[in-house]
Length: 86
Image (cartoon, rainbow, N blue to C red):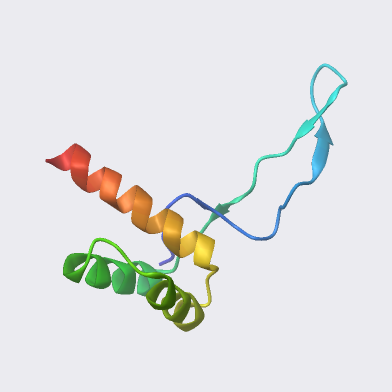
């Protein structure tokens, strides 16, 4: 039961693709499909602390097999979600 949280993956990079008008444009990165285990762990950590330091982010990224940018973006988006809920 994988869940998608909508964060960029490392795979699609800066590839270029032909768009409808025949001109070249940037292709959007694919959304990262976070596993339910990854989301659960991220949520637990978020409940304890809303912001991660560099070393904490690095350790968490390694533990969850995600990039530091994905962790950073997840926390940014989660803080915005919390703000909208409040």
